[in-house]
Image (cartoon, rainbow, N blue to C red):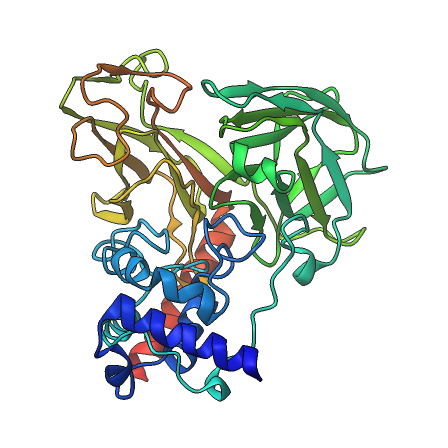
Length: 440
């Protein structure tokens, strides 16, 4: 009991020191941590901000949160955290993985901090979030353990230096027959691998075939993908897995780092209705007959805009949108130009941050349904000025390159091509649902 009294006294003194002599009195009529703030943090923050997460501090209880109260208010009010960079005023706004805070949640956090960050009644505390351990499969709770695990060859990541790439190839032997993939997860090693692997790909080259099967693609902010119900990717039983791993040194060595990819398949004999190709690269740079990236030339203290257009020859359903730029990248827009000339901005990421490679996953009832002949137009804006907070040096000319300090511009788009019959059916279902909602 003495220890508890001492700890409570210490917290009260800390509140008074940080928030002023009226902090505790103000707390009596303000939002509280246990009743109002903990539910927000549990929903939006603690997946990363826990003792084994990638966040720089844990935010799972009051004693952890209190010293960072002002910082939490600052980062949330500026919409820096949680990381979610879609423009809220244009394009589709309904996403399966929406990590953003509502205006009401941001105002609640600000009011709580301004009142002195009171703890509140412990009885109001919500149940703790069931977190997946840092080294475990994120999808295991939903799908069970992976059916097949593919591992890269080990790589020694140096402590300091420029970007590093590791491109080993391994034989794929996990299946005895062709199967349909329903989900995949890209898992860097824990704990150092999660810090040094910036992004990467694991692509299967089937034995005796020209096609490639993108088993998994990864970026900080996008580690797994579950295909929509009735959609899968055809995976052969034999082939070679080509890895493309982008490492970035963090000040300490990461010896013999290994990346794993977990694969979950539909049951044997089950063939999904639709075959997806997963995330497809749509280039913005190096279009109109130019060599890749030849058109990227960003002057010191300047800007550049690039556009890339791609015509869809088949009907398509878009599941997700993931821009890929580097440190000078600020904006990427995906726009549909329909065969009748109408234009629609599907999504715009207007606060792009190279530290995050987020795939924005559309809810099922708003996924873009695109007829053949639709042109997908991607527009990228680069900011090489001092106003760009992650610009390493605005004095430099910037050209195309693989390093983070160089530039590139493309989008990874989760897309499934369908036939005319399925497209017509999907459009009819969409119209019926919209009409029903309009009558409610």
